[in-house]
Image 1 (cartoon, rainbow, N blue to C red):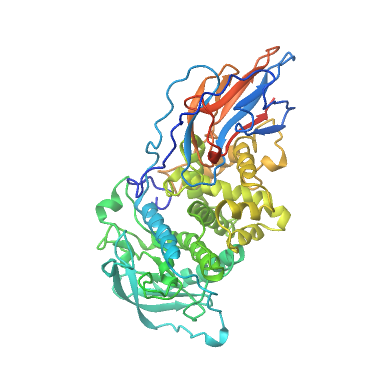
Image 2: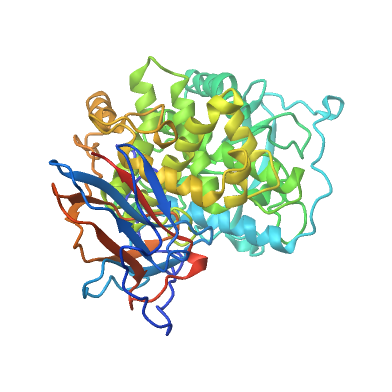
Amino acid sequence: MPRRLWMVGLSSLLATACSSSPGTQPPLAPCTATSGGQVSLGIAAYSVIDPTQTAGCAVFPANPAGTTIEYLVVPQSASSIPDDSQAFKLGGNPLAAPPAPGAPLAGRSVAQQFDLRLRLAEREFAAQLPRPLLAPPRAPALVTPVDSGHVRTFKVCNTLSCDPRKPTTLSTVTATALKVGTHIAIFVDNAAPQPGLTDSDLNNLRTVFDTRLYETDTLAFGGESDIDNNGMVIVLMTGKVNALVTSAQCSSPTGGYVAGFFFGADLITTPPFATGNAGEIFYSIVPDPSGTLSCQHSVSAVTQLVPVTFVHEFQHMISFNQHFLVRSNFPEDLWLNEGLSHYAEENGGRTFLPDTATFCRYAFGDLYNSAQYFTAPQNYFLVDTAGIGGLANRGAYWLFVRYLVDQVGATLGSADSVTRRLDGTALIGAANVTNATGGTAFPTVLARWALANYVSDLPGFTAPPELQYVTWKFRSDYQTMKTACGAFFPTGNLPSQFPLTPSVVDGSAALAGMLRAGSGSYYRLQQGASAPGFTLLFSNSAGGALRTTLVPRLNVIRLQ
């Protein structure tokens, strides 16, 4: 299968996430029956306990019934600080040492590393540039038509460490506009390997870009800029993208390739942060069946893969315009920016339904990534920069945006209204999420999302509406999509069973782990018939209070 954004990757670009030491504060006192954090829940009711307000305590009443009570317990960090983490203990007994802070998590493919590099560079440049007063207007009177056959030169990244401040990381490419639509102009590198895309192939790409994906993304996220006043988004298909990786990297099980990208430096006109292109450009690979530039890419693979990459990267282009150029603020936080772009893939794919085969190409990566996250959510950040790009991290980003859209869409009137609110604002990160939900505090949204991940479609259980995904029923949809997409993605298929399987514990549990910003650990806590009440102490690894900046939460919902 094509190796794109969901491939397992290479070593990290950045150091792994930092974490805090437990500190020297005294141990928390043992919990008693009268401590704070009292839990009294009926079936399907839930409680979110802030251990910094209850001296770490959660107090569960006796079970007078003749049947077992079961709770889902999720210790979570609701921190809005990227990469924030701290070791924790849950229970009162001596515990084994928790995992080492900052231990390496999942690796990233070449494409994921490059994507991270570009997004980090955009934020770095934005921090050093004077804020634009207003994005250049899209004035029809100023539009210069880009006719088919028009030849121009571009500066294109020639290395994964691309930086316009280092001219040697950019190469000059001469390309010709071979297909021009209403919104899209497709330029092809004059030096691209031959034979390449046929006239029919180019017509099909223009159609899907121009009449479907462009409209889908602009409806969902808002408008892109038009700093070159040509009324177009340029799709530049060039072998320089192919050559960003070697054939050895490309064919490696832990490597991969860059299928395409957007770089905000194209929309910056201030040296030395500008590429000099001064226009809206999406870069993509070209067909190279003989592997003359790097690894082999057939015509059919390129025509299937590039549109999926375009709809993802076009969201980044719109986001950069809406946050930085229009509203003079920083680009969106990396984790939320990526979540929106992965949502764009699924959203674009839905426009092809009931064509399941095409939908698979757009949505499969998101589902695959989400399954990686559900397998061990406690190991990955939601709110992060250092882990961005790993499969499971990207799965978390997509799941969170998908949940937001499902929850807020009905209130705002449509799914597009939610994503347009997220992109069309000067707010970023946690503040943006709170604004998009109409004022719901970020920790509250995170707690509900964490519970929804398990109980949304739990058999025999009716989850509260705010703890549900609407669009996906993952316990059945993984198998449905596994069957539908297996012919297209046989080497990276989906699980047949829902992979989030909490450990089963009782009230004497002695648990330890690592809290990572946005994510949590999952436990099914069972209390036998006629069992007495019990307490849980939620502390750092030394038994002291968890940091308030970590925003620790103990989320509890009664399952039976």
